[in-house]
Image (cartoon, rainbow, N blue to C red; front, side, top):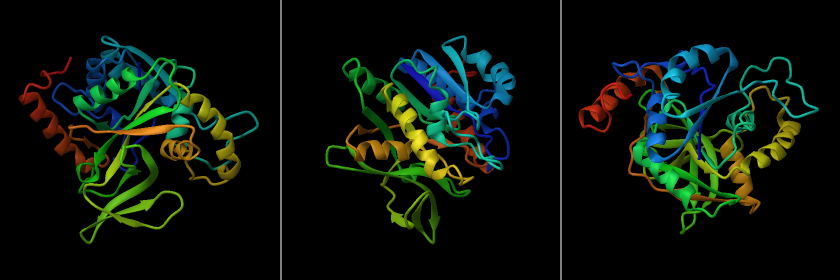
Length: 299
């Protein structure tokens, strides 16, 4: 099974290429910990989705480390990587979104896979949960997707808003609705503002949210190839619109072409949405090293 890492963002709010920001004394990045944990759980290859202009720097830093323990491939998210008949409009600078990032890796995804954000730390148990879910499926399964969901109170930062998928599910923990939203505390309340259509709404601290850790069967690639042109027909003139994986999954579930099982994890999330988040992340990683979860230097 494959690990696919969304790492094409420059991290405008963080103020630099946050995926390549050292987070421990040995110079490891959060991506190093993600690959290490995924390899330990059983994943046997990783696809990094990056911008082509960062390839050399990326390969010479994290690439040269992780390729010692796992097969590594690189896919480039490019604004001009569009289906036949479409051209990137003048003035478009923002990437096409997370679903397009996976679309950009379509030639490399040959097996069931999980996706993660490059700037999030999910914890070792999370990868085990995701791996065990995919391993439990019959060979050749189609549309049997899953999401490792976190309590929203465990995924927020004191330094600003965060982007999360608010997840609603039935009594059997199958998703019914997924709303990609900006989430922040306002006057003591947690407010979710949908990125697309819809009014802001209040959520509780124990509300489940998606952190973009999805487990997919490889048939998702065909679904993206089908839906991306349809999305472009409606949105290509909007220079800030994004083709988002939570939105695609929500559509497939509502069309009854896929199911999304919510998976529980005991792991604690942390990440670097903003530059001010870094000290807390460095401290959290050091605590895990002190407890023996990771060895000093990781590799």
